[in-house]
Image (cartoon, one colour):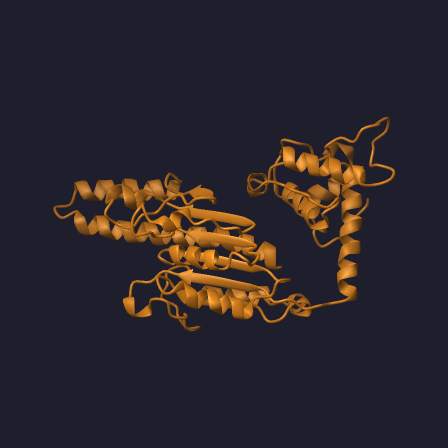
Length: 337
Protein backbone atom coordinates (compact mmCIF):
# COMPACT_ATOMS: atom_id res chain seq x y z
CA UNK A 1 0.00 0.00 0.00
CA UNK A 2 1.30 3.44 -0.95
CA UNK A 3 1.52 5.85 1.96
CA UNK A 4 1.07 9.60 1.51
CA UNK A 5 3.99 11.41 3.13
CA UNK A 6 3.32 15.15 2.84
CA UNK A 7 2.42 17.00 6.02
CA UNK A 8 -0.93 17.91 4.45
CA UNK A 9 -1.98 14.33 3.68
CA UNK A 10 -0.02 12.02 6.00
CA UNK A 11 -2.17 10.00 8.39
CA UNK A 12 -5.48 10.72 6.62
CA UNK A 13 -7.10 7.31 6.09
CA UNK A 14 -9.60 8.58 3.51
CA UNK A 15 -6.84 10.06 1.35
CA UNK A 16 -4.71 6.93 1.80
CA UNK A 17 -7.58 4.86 0.41
CA UNK A 18 -7.90 7.29 -2.49
CA UNK A 19 -4.20 6.76 -3.29
CA UNK A 20 -4.62 3.00 -3.49
CA UNK A 21 -8.15 2.11 -4.60
CA UNK A 22 -10.29 3.65 -7.36
CA UNK A 23 -13.36 2.80 -5.31
CA UNK A 24 -12.36 5.71 -3.08
CA UNK A 25 -11.93 8.37 -5.76
CA UNK A 26 -12.91 11.86 -4.54
CA UNK A 27 -15.68 13.20 -6.72
CA UNK A 28 -17.65 16.44 -7.20
CA UNK A 29 -20.66 17.09 -4.96
CA UNK A 30 -19.04 15.39 -1.96
CA UNK A 31 -17.78 17.00 1.23
CA UNK A 32 -15.59 16.37 4.24
CA UNK A 33 -12.24 17.12 5.80
CA UNK A 34 -10.47 15.17 3.05
CA UNK A 35 -12.01 17.58 0.50
CA UNK A 36 -10.70 20.51 2.55
CA UNK A 37 -7.19 19.06 2.45
CA UNK A 38 -7.35 18.63 -1.33
CA UNK A 39 -8.59 22.22 -1.69
CA UNK A 40 -5.73 23.48 0.52
CA UNK A 41 -3.20 21.51 -1.54
CA UNK A 42 -4.51 22.95 -4.82
CA UNK A 43 -4.40 26.48 -3.45
CA UNK A 44 -0.99 26.01 -1.82
CA UNK A 45 0.63 24.56 -4.93
CA UNK A 46 -1.14 27.13 -7.13
CA UNK A 47 -0.61 25.03 -10.26
CA UNK A 48 -1.25 26.47 -12.74
CA UNK A 49 -1.05 29.99 -11.22
CA UNK A 50 -4.35 31.62 -10.40
CA UNK A 51 -6.13 28.78 -8.58
CA UNK A 52 -9.44 30.04 -7.17
CA UNK A 53 -11.85 28.20 -4.89
CA UNK A 54 -14.77 30.13 -3.44
CA UNK A 55 -15.10 30.94 0.25
CA UNK A 56 -18.39 29.06 0.28
CA UNK A 57 -16.88 25.80 -0.99
CA UNK A 58 -13.97 26.06 1.43
CA UNK A 59 -16.20 26.93 4.37
CA UNK A 60 -18.43 23.91 3.71
CA UNK A 61 -15.52 21.64 2.72
CA UNK A 62 -17.57 21.02 -0.41
CA UNK A 63 -16.31 19.67 -3.74
CA UNK A 64 -18.17 22.19 -5.88
CA UNK A 65 -17.60 23.66 -9.38
CA UNK A 66 -14.58 25.77 -8.34
CA UNK A 67 -12.81 22.76 -6.82
CA UNK A 68 -13.67 20.65 -9.84
CA UNK A 69 -12.22 23.26 -12.21
CA UNK A 70 -9.08 23.57 -10.09
CA UNK A 71 -8.64 19.78 -10.35
CA UNK A 72 -9.08 19.87 -14.14
CA UNK A 73 -6.57 22.70 -14.46
CA UNK A 74 -4.10 20.85 -12.25
CA UNK A 75 -4.34 17.70 -14.38
CA UNK A 76 -3.96 19.73 -17.59
CA UNK A 77 -0.81 21.47 -16.30
CA UNK A 78 1.36 18.38 -16.87
CA UNK A 79 2.80 16.94 -20.04
CA UNK A 80 1.48 14.38 -20.52
CA UNK A 81 -1.78 15.29 -18.81
CA UNK A 82 -3.08 13.19 -15.94
CA UNK A 83 -5.53 10.86 -17.72
CA UNK A 84 -7.17 7.60 -16.84
CA UNK A 85 -7.26 4.53 -19.10
CA UNK A 86 -8.88 5.44 -22.44
CA UNK A 87 -9.33 9.10 -21.54
CA UNK A 88 -8.44 11.92 -23.93
CA UNK A 89 -9.88 14.76 -21.82
CA UNK A 90 -9.21 15.24 -18.11
CA UNK A 91 -12.06 14.75 -15.67
CA UNK A 92 -12.73 16.57 -12.35
CA UNK A 93 -12.12 13.46 -10.23
CA UNK A 94 -9.26 13.07 -7.74
CA UNK A 95 -8.12 9.50 -8.23
CA UNK A 96 -4.98 7.49 -7.57
CA UNK A 97 -2.72 9.39 -10.00
CA UNK A 98 -3.94 12.83 -8.95
CA UNK A 99 -3.71 12.36 -5.18
CA UNK A 100 -0.24 10.83 -5.50
CA UNK A 101 0.93 13.69 -7.73
CA UNK A 102 -0.45 16.26 -5.28
CA UNK A 103 1.33 14.49 -2.41
CA UNK A 104 4.64 14.35 -4.29
CA UNK A 105 4.52 18.05 -5.17
CA UNK A 106 3.66 18.94 -1.58
CA UNK A 107 6.69 16.98 -0.39
CA UNK A 108 8.91 18.74 -2.91
CA UNK A 109 7.51 22.10 -1.91
CA UNK A 110 8.29 21.39 1.75
CA UNK A 111 11.87 20.34 0.87
CA UNK A 112 12.38 23.52 -1.15
CA UNK A 113 11.10 25.56 1.78
CA UNK A 114 13.63 23.79 4.01
CA UNK A 115 16.59 24.73 1.83
CA UNK A 116 16.45 28.46 2.52
CA UNK A 117 14.61 29.45 5.65
CA UNK A 118 13.65 33.10 5.80
CA UNK A 119 11.78 33.56 9.03
CA UNK A 120 8.53 35.48 8.83
CA UNK A 121 6.44 37.20 11.49
CA UNK A 122 2.77 36.33 12.00
CA UNK A 123 0.48 38.88 13.68
CA UNK A 124 -2.84 38.20 15.41
CA UNK A 125 -4.82 41.23 16.60
CA UNK A 126 -7.72 40.54 18.94
CA UNK A 127 -10.05 43.34 20.03
CA UNK A 128 -12.16 42.07 22.90
CA UNK A 129 -15.30 43.26 24.66
CA UNK A 130 -15.52 44.63 28.20
CA UNK A 131 -17.91 46.46 30.52
CA UNK A 132 -15.68 49.13 32.08
CA UNK A 133 -15.19 52.49 30.32
CA UNK A 134 -11.75 52.91 31.90
CA UNK A 135 -10.46 49.99 29.86
CA UNK A 136 -11.60 51.31 26.48
CA UNK A 137 -8.90 51.07 23.83
CA UNK A 138 -6.14 49.95 26.20
CA UNK A 139 -3.85 46.94 25.73
CA UNK A 140 -5.05 43.84 27.55
CA UNK A 141 -2.75 42.80 30.42
CA UNK A 142 -1.29 39.36 29.90
CA UNK A 143 -2.66 38.18 33.27
CA UNK A 144 -6.22 39.31 32.47
CA UNK A 145 -8.69 36.45 33.00
CA UNK A 146 -12.10 38.10 33.40
CA UNK A 147 -13.39 37.82 29.82
CA UNK A 148 -15.79 34.87 29.98
CA UNK A 149 -14.82 32.07 27.65
CA UNK A 150 -12.51 34.15 25.49
CA UNK A 151 -10.00 35.70 27.88
CA UNK A 152 -6.24 36.05 27.78
CA UNK A 153 -5.78 32.84 29.74
CA UNK A 154 -7.00 30.92 26.70
CA UNK A 155 -4.97 33.21 24.46
CA UNK A 156 -1.78 32.44 26.37
CA UNK A 157 -2.52 28.75 26.03
CA UNK A 158 -3.21 29.32 22.34
CA UNK A 159 0.19 30.99 21.90
CA UNK A 160 1.94 27.98 23.44
CA UNK A 161 0.12 25.67 21.03
CA UNK A 162 1.21 27.78 18.05
CA UNK A 163 4.86 28.28 18.99
CA UNK A 164 6.06 24.72 18.50
CA UNK A 165 9.69 23.95 17.67
CA UNK A 166 8.72 23.57 14.01
CA UNK A 167 6.96 26.95 14.06
CA UNK A 168 9.97 28.64 15.65
CA UNK A 169 12.24 27.17 13.00
CA UNK A 170 10.31 28.98 10.28
CA UNK A 171 8.99 32.05 12.10
CA UNK A 172 9.99 34.90 14.33
CA UNK A 173 8.16 35.05 17.70
CA UNK A 174 4.40 35.03 17.26
CA UNK A 175 2.93 38.52 17.73
CA UNK A 176 -0.37 38.26 19.60
CA UNK A 177 -1.75 41.78 20.16
CA UNK A 178 -4.81 42.29 22.37
CA UNK A 179 -6.80 45.45 23.06
CA UNK A 180 -10.03 46.28 24.81
CA UNK A 181 -12.62 47.36 22.25
CA UNK A 182 -14.23 50.74 21.74
CA UNK A 183 -11.04 52.81 21.75
CA UNK A 184 -9.13 54.60 19.04
CA UNK A 185 -8.64 52.24 16.15
CA UNK A 186 -5.61 54.29 15.05
CA UNK A 187 -3.63 53.08 18.06
CA UNK A 188 -4.40 49.45 17.31
CA UNK A 189 -3.69 49.86 13.60
CA UNK A 190 -0.30 51.38 14.39
CA UNK A 191 0.51 48.49 16.74
CA UNK A 192 -0.14 46.10 13.86
CA UNK A 193 1.94 48.17 11.44
CA UNK A 194 4.86 48.10 13.87
CA UNK A 195 4.85 44.28 13.81
CA UNK A 196 3.59 43.59 10.29
CA UNK A 197 5.59 41.40 7.93
CA UNK A 198 4.34 41.30 4.29
CA UNK A 199 5.46 37.66 4.05
CA UNK A 200 3.75 36.64 7.27
CA UNK A 201 0.12 35.99 8.18
CA UNK A 202 -2.06 38.84 9.48
CA UNK A 203 -5.27 37.94 11.32
CA UNK A 204 -7.83 40.27 12.95
CA UNK A 205 -10.53 39.11 15.38
CA UNK A 206 -13.17 41.37 16.94
CA UNK A 207 -15.36 40.22 19.84
CA UNK A 208 -18.46 41.96 21.22
CA UNK A 209 -17.88 45.75 21.21
CA UNK A 210 -14.42 45.00 19.86
CA UNK A 211 -16.06 43.94 16.59
CA UNK A 212 -16.85 47.43 15.27
CA UNK A 213 -13.39 48.62 16.34
CA UNK A 214 -11.77 45.70 14.52
CA UNK A 215 -13.62 46.71 11.35
CA UNK A 216 -12.22 50.23 11.67
CA UNK A 217 -8.72 48.81 12.10
CA UNK A 218 -9.16 46.66 8.99
CA UNK A 219 -10.16 49.73 7.00
CA UNK A 220 -6.99 51.51 8.14
CA UNK A 221 -4.90 48.49 7.10
CA UNK A 222 -6.46 48.17 3.63
CA UNK A 223 -3.01 48.27 2.00
CA UNK A 224 -1.91 45.20 3.95
CA UNK A 225 -2.83 41.62 3.10
CA UNK A 226 -5.17 40.32 5.83
CA UNK A 227 -5.38 36.54 5.64
CA UNK A 228 -8.37 36.12 7.94
CA UNK A 229 -10.85 38.28 9.80
CA UNK A 230 -13.50 37.07 12.24
CA UNK A 231 -16.23 38.86 14.17
CA UNK A 232 -17.57 37.07 17.25
CA UNK A 233 -21.06 38.41 18.06
CA UNK A 234 -19.91 41.93 17.22
CA UNK A 235 -21.93 44.45 19.25
CA UNK A 236 -22.98 47.62 17.42
CA UNK A 237 -24.83 50.48 19.12
CA UNK A 238 -27.65 50.01 16.59
CA UNK A 239 -28.42 48.40 13.24
CA UNK A 240 -27.77 51.65 11.38
CA UNK A 241 -24.10 51.79 12.48
CA UNK A 242 -22.21 52.43 9.23
CA UNK A 243 -19.30 50.30 10.39
CA UNK A 244 -21.44 47.29 9.38
CA UNK A 245 -20.83 48.40 5.79
CA UNK A 246 -17.03 48.64 6.02
CA UNK A 247 -15.53 46.54 3.25
CA UNK A 248 -12.69 44.27 4.35
CA UNK A 249 -10.27 42.80 1.83
CA UNK A 250 -9.36 39.88 4.09
CA UNK A 251 -8.96 36.65 2.13
CA UNK A 252 -11.38 34.87 4.49
CA UNK A 253 -14.07 36.83 6.37
CA UNK A 254 -16.39 35.18 8.91
CA UNK A 255 -19.11 36.76 11.04
CA UNK A 256 -20.52 34.72 13.95
CA UNK A 257 -23.62 36.18 15.62
CA UNK A 258 -27.00 35.59 17.30
CA UNK A 259 -30.23 37.63 17.27
CA UNK A 260 -31.90 36.27 20.42
CA UNK A 261 -30.98 39.30 22.53
CA UNK A 262 -32.11 41.77 19.88
CA UNK A 263 -35.48 40.04 19.60
CA UNK A 264 -36.08 40.56 23.32
CA UNK A 265 -35.11 44.24 23.49
CA UNK A 266 -34.29 46.11 20.29
CA UNK A 267 -32.97 49.03 22.33
CA UNK A 268 -30.02 46.87 23.29
CA UNK A 269 -26.88 46.40 21.17
CA UNK A 270 -27.35 45.20 17.60
CA UNK A 271 -25.94 41.80 16.63
CA UNK A 272 -26.33 40.58 13.08
CA UNK A 273 -25.04 40.42 9.49
CA UNK A 274 -22.07 42.48 8.31
CA UNK A 275 -21.43 43.32 4.66
CA UNK A 276 -19.04 41.16 2.64
CA UNK A 277 -18.61 38.51 5.38
CA UNK A 278 -19.66 34.88 5.40
CA UNK A 279 -22.52 34.85 7.90
CA UNK A 280 -22.87 32.23 10.66
CA UNK A 281 -26.17 32.83 12.46
CA UNK A 282 -26.36 30.94 15.77
CA UNK A 283 -29.86 32.23 16.62
CA UNK A 284 -31.69 28.99 15.95
CA UNK A 285 -28.94 26.61 17.05
CA UNK A 286 -30.23 24.13 19.61
CA UNK A 287 -28.32 25.56 22.57
CA UNK A 288 -29.53 29.12 21.86
CA UNK A 289 -33.13 28.16 21.08
CA UNK A 290 -33.17 25.99 24.21
CA UNK A 291 -31.94 28.85 26.37
CA UNK A 292 -34.66 31.10 24.94
CA UNK A 293 -37.35 28.51 25.63
CA UNK A 294 -36.15 28.22 29.23
CA UNK A 295 -36.28 32.01 29.56
CA UNK A 296 -39.87 32.15 28.30
CA UNK A 297 -40.90 29.62 30.91
CA UNK A 298 -39.10 31.56 33.68
CA UNK A 299 -40.69 34.85 32.61
CA UNK A 300 -44.20 33.40 32.81
CA UNK A 301 -43.50 32.29 36.39
CA UNK A 302 -41.90 35.59 37.47
CA UNK A 303 -43.43 38.74 38.89
CA UNK A 304 -40.38 40.75 37.80
CA UNK A 305 -39.19 39.47 34.41
CA UNK A 306 -36.93 42.39 33.42
CA UNK A 307 -33.85 41.22 35.36
CA UNK A 308 -34.31 37.78 33.81
CA UNK A 309 -34.39 39.30 30.34
CA UNK A 310 -31.25 41.36 30.95
CA UNK A 311 -29.38 38.40 32.38
CA UNK A 312 -30.39 36.29 29.38
CA UNK A 313 -29.24 38.96 26.89
CA UNK A 314 -25.86 39.11 28.61
CA UNK A 315 -25.45 35.34 28.87
CA UNK A 316 -26.54 34.55 25.33
CA UNK A 317 -24.18 37.22 23.99
CA UNK A 318 -21.21 35.72 25.84
CA UNK A 319 -22.21 32.25 24.69
CA UNK A 320 -22.27 33.35 21.04
CA UNK A 321 -19.01 35.27 21.29
CA UNK A 322 -17.28 32.28 22.88
CA UNK A 323 -18.69 29.83 20.34
CA UNK A 324 -17.66 32.08 17.45
CA UNK A 325 -14.19 32.47 18.91
CA UNK A 326 -13.75 28.71 19.18
CA UNK A 327 -14.75 28.38 15.53
CA UNK A 328 -12.36 31.18 14.58
CA UNK A 329 -9.50 29.50 16.42
CA UNK A 330 -9.83 26.46 14.15
CA UNK A 331 -9.34 28.69 11.11
CA UNK A 332 -6.49 30.58 12.78
CA UNK A 333 -4.64 27.37 13.63
CA UNK A 334 -4.99 26.14 10.04
CA UNK A 335 -3.39 29.34 8.79
CA UNK A 336 -0.57 29.49 11.32
CA UNK A 337 0.43 25.85 11.85
